[in-house]
Image (cartoon, rainbow, N blue to C red):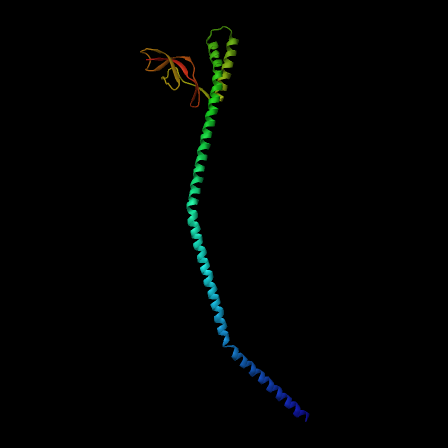
Length: 210
């Protein structure tokens, strides 16, 4: 009797399991037709979202083009203004440098000009005859030191005697006719001239022939 009851229980359990499996299959068949519809609905939402984003991107690009078109003339004007300011500053810097160099040259020439009378007096002293060799040697040493100092400062003596007259460097105070001399030849120097670079400190005072 016990064995029969066990067999009945087992058979009943098998029946219940089969019924549950069938119920799940039926439920699965009922749900499956709805899945494609859900997927299609999701796809439609994604497509609408993509279209919306694309439209928004296009609108943003158009706005950017409009803004760029508005700013282009302003940017061009600002660039032109900037370039003009740079050019003006560069010209100002060069002009200032030239003025500074010219000012230094003028001041230097003015200072050196005030020392030239000392040179002239040394020349006169050397041209005077004297029997005092010590005195003469002392004057020669002073003259040598003076000339060396002038050379260190970039001062050069203007070539005059035997050279052609040049109004840029010479000041003719006398004129003489001499067939043995060339035309416009300097035959005598009354006062030496000096220059520093292209700037004349003092014109040479000369006598010109023919």
